[in-house]
Structures are given as structure tokens and as C-alpha cells.
Length: 455
Image 1 (cartoon, rainbow, N blue to C red):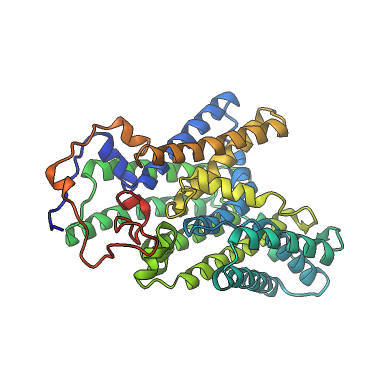
Image 2 (image 1 turned 135 degrees about the horizontal axis):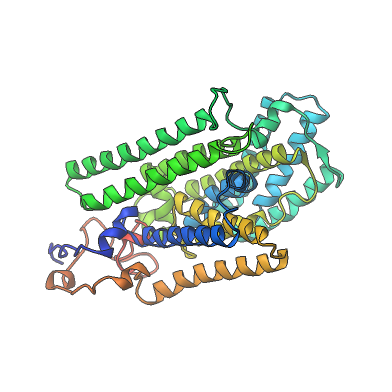
């Protein structure tokens, strides 16, 4: 073993542009799917004669898909850890019927109903997490059983009938909007203020990150890449703010969107900037190495399963609040939409790769597809076919990328990298294990496979 360092990576052109979203394999996939989302929006904007980006339609897209995007936030963490959860739709429906009955028949105030819903999600998650983490039953089997059990409980408790939701304050959770101070202009001022604040935060956080990278001597993207990134993101946020603020009187940025944004910020921070987040990636990337590194694998598995059920409860309450009732058909197929959003958003089937932001982008691809095809009058059966083909294409790209040596689609358009003598002699830190328990080499580490050679 030697201490020879790898030759510095070449930069320039598309390689540098790829650093806009971090530069890893997962980040480049997200870069590609973000481009696909833009193309889809432009296509439907032209095909529908400008209806897609009408303020009312944009608001409807958020309202109609907020619960799926909330589920995608939890599902990406489950999939990164190497599991799957098929029960989220049933858990959401079960939570919804219990909360609806508690408020409608039991006279429970709205805030107590929310606490009851979160408690149900935590208990269900603890139950399923126990079987997965400590008994060792595969998550696929545990959550398949959960899908059947909680679907049955939903229909049993609700007697297979619809339960209305009447509490006006609770209904604001899924159907409310930011208030309008009536300042005499055609736009909702709070929505515009939030949009400009978000744009400013994007700029501040980007250059704060660059300063931190310089301080620790880490590699950072060229300045022009950061400038392009903040200009594009700030422009998108400001345009979106005007769209949401310019709808019909009484509408603005919806409350479900506020809930979604808060959850995205929290979970993006957890996955990127906390020990727990790094451990989730390490368990999904190589659990043998993670265990040798001291990661409490059982605790991580328990956490991701429990967290998923809590978010399913949140999604269920948002849905019944918007639909003003809870019924026996709620939650049907939600798990499939959430899983599709995660994989379309760049997560790897094998685990260890994926991000919260990527999953939201993947969910928006599905949402815009659904909305655009409906505006064009495409029948529901054809919509399902198109969504299935999009999911198959996204996962197929991931598999083909790995089969060709882990190179991303974006990297195929960049200049080939010459292998230097330093690259051939590159070794790894001495504190890493030489051989894993299953006989694999030390090239597999506890880090996400997107940053690990030969992962």
C-alpha cells in the first residue's frame, strides 16, 4: 500500500456544469431529470395553449399532489437505506379515518386530531420497524402485510363508508391559502414576499457553502457555475411566486405547499448535514462496512420505517382535509406513486443513492405529466401506460449506467479521463478494513456509493 494520491480531476465544460448540483452520480441524475421536468413543462405549455402555467392550474398541481410528495420524502430515506414500504397508502387511509371519526363523532378539537394522527403514525411505524430492524423480516414482507392489515382496519373502523370532516380550522390544512392583506394590488403580497426571501436565501446559502469549502480546503465548483445556479434558481422561485400570487381572488400559495416546503427543508438538512443522515446512506451503500464503522444498523432501520409511517400519517391528514372526508378508497395506489417519484428522481434500486430534492423533482415530473395529459383530454388508461413507461425508463437508465462502470449519462458527453500512474496506485486510508465479512474488498466503504470507487 502506498500513500499516492489520485491525480486531480479534470474540469471544464459539462463536468463543471455537473457540479451545479454537487457533482456526484446521483446529482447528475437529478440534473438530467430537472432538465426533463423543464422540457415536459414547456411541451405541455405549448400543447395546451398556455394552460399549464396558468396561476390556477399551478396551484391545483400543488394541491392535488402535495400528499404524494410528502410520502416521497419519507420513501426516499427508506429506499436509500435499502428497503421498500408498500404500506404507506393504507397507513395514510387508516390514520385519516381515525382522525375523521375522532373529530366528527368524538368532538375532538383539530389540534388534538392532528396529535392523534401523528401518534398513530408513530405507533404503526414502531410496529413495522420492530419487525424489520429487530426481528429481521424483510421490509417488503412486513409492509406488504401492513398494507393488507391497515387497509382492512380502515374499512372495519369506518364501516366501509365515508366519514365527513367538518372542523373549519382543520380544513385549512389541506385547502387553505396564505392570507391576503388586501393592499389594492392584483398579487398576494405574502406569497411574493416568501418568493423573494427564498431567492435571497438561495444566494446566501450558495456563497456561504463556497466560503466553507475554501476554509476547509475542499474542492468547489467554479464561480461561474455557482452564478448560473443561483440566477436560475432565484429566477424560478420569483416566477413561481408571481404565478402563485396571481391566481383568482382568495387563492395564493396553498397551505399544503407550506407544509411540503417545511418538510423538504427539514429532511434535506437531516440527510445532508447530520450523522443520522450519513448513517442512512452508509447502511444502504454497504451495511457490512457501516457495521464495522460503528453504525447502529438496527436503530437506523427502525428510524426510517417509523419516520415513513409518521409522514404517511401527515399525508393522510392533508388529504382528508382537502377532500373534506375520509373514505374506504383513500390511499389506493399512493405507495406506487411515491416509489415512482423516488426512482424517477435519481434514487438507485440497490440503495445508497438518492436525495430529498431529487424525489420532489421526480414527483413533480409525475404531477405535471398527470396534469398535462388531463388538460389534453388523454384517457386515464393511457395516462397509466405513459407513467409506467417513464418509470421503466428512469430505472433502466440507472441500471445501464451501473452496468457500464457507474458512469452517469452526463459524463458520457464529457471528455474521457486519462488514467495516470497516480490513479493506478491509488489506495485508501489505513483505518478502513481490508476485507469485509462477506469477502468483498475494502473498495466498498460506508459512504454513499455515488462517492465510492467501484461501488
